[in-house]
Image (cartoon, rainbow, N blue to C red):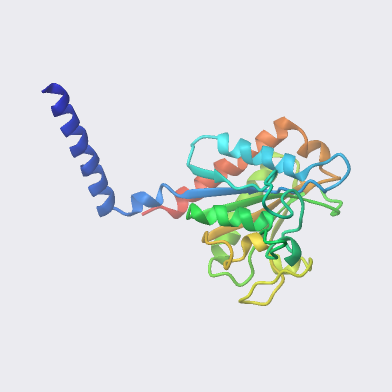
Length: 247
């Protein structure tokens, strides 16, 4: 009899909690889904794997408390996609193209991300050829959430810069890079595939270029620094989520 009463009380508590959430939908906003997309590129310099450094940063971020509803999408090692471990985020042949019936690594990652219905996607990359020990934020041009994403990207790169010796180079539009040939269908502008609203369903999406694979190599390959960067991103993300979810 005691076990039955306990079970009924648990059912009533669960029902009551769900009813409360239904009456206060803002509570659901406090449980956002976050997707992390580390670079899968391995062809980024001699003795340097962007995939390795970015994945380490993302893993550090995901391990940092508080633990949210977080997922990582990564094509590294996938056998049934093309450009699984290499490829540019701005080239048609390496993103939207289908080759021998296979989608690209980037397409695989975005399809996996969309399955989670995320509110936020954070792509983590390293820059190259800049000759600057710096951090940059990128957002999508002409996006309905362009202003909000500029704020988020700005806060994240500021946090990274404060935690390291990386110079804060600000937030840029993906249309300004002049790279390759992938374009947004709405604007016709050059774009980052991962930030395109036609590909990525998350309303908030930013791409971080953390350090330069030559100038910042020592920092980027240092496990302790990777952890510091990941923690800085996660902590600022949590603060930003709290700010946007205030009643």
